[in-house]
Image (cartoon, rainbow, N blue to C red):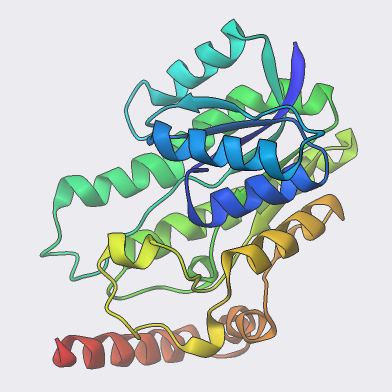
Length: 263
């Protein structure tokens, strides 16, 4: 089995930026997401930008489907590929009142952000351990605080942070790196897909996907447990530890209600 770096949700945004960053450092890549045309365009761009690299393998898969992870694993097996590094980037969120948002779509957040991530991680662990590779989970600063207005998304990222920290401790004696990349707002299509209104997130917290990818790669390869790109974002993750949780929740609720009143 040939060892590769598998990146989920690689068709755009942080996933695409991470694919370029790993390619820059010579990692053979497998890119997966739902949208095959975007994946193939990215694979072609990487092959052009890094001509010494083998063109990334593309596997279109919807990991949110009940059999999505199993189908991806079967495709990897059939092609003789084994993830030595797994980058769990696939995920999405929704903005709005939980009672008014579509219930099935909210459950789909948990299916993709948590169930699929956990399933793929556990399937890949034997190979990752054998190759002394690693797992990079893309979480969010949302994982450090409750999020009225994006309640399920925040909760899903809290799960990712917690799971990552535990696996970091469990696997470090085996020489396996496990890291959570926790960006703040990023200028990608995520906000539009989630229905987040323009200007909802403070501009001071927003970073380009390329900056997030560089920080994530460096921190992961350096053996860090948590990477939070950008000083303002690092401060944001510390506040829930320094201030009463009720105070943080009240502030975030005020901000959410203010946005609601603006429509």
